[in-house]
Length: 99
Image 1 (tube, rainbow, N blue to C red):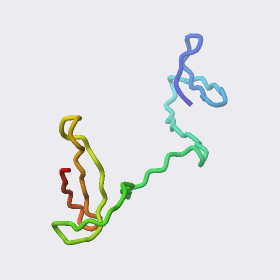
Image 2 (tube, rainbow, N blue to C red):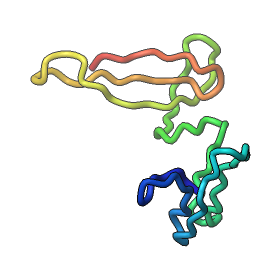
Image 3 (cartoon, helix red, strand yellow):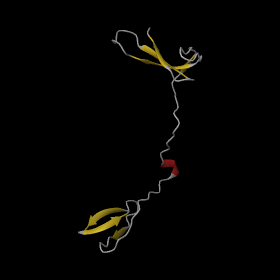
Image 4 (cartoon, rainbow, N blue to C red):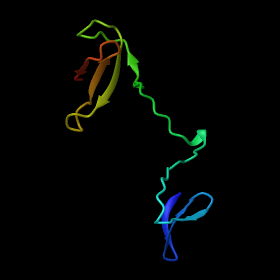
């Protein structure tokens, strides 16, 4: 139910079903906002981070792990090759390789 003004009167109205209830300013009431959202439409928040970058066999210079994520970023002029970045799957150390 949301507050509206209808015909000069203060009312609360349900946006879903249209039910209207007049607000009596002399009576104190507590209203609680509640939405019944179907489970299929709810947003799910995951507090764990997932890295979806591709993996490659590359030795981490910090911990010696033999697997790292990689990606490319154009850090120099467009006529020069992109810079390849690596991130260790074990310790998270990030380093770059210039081509």
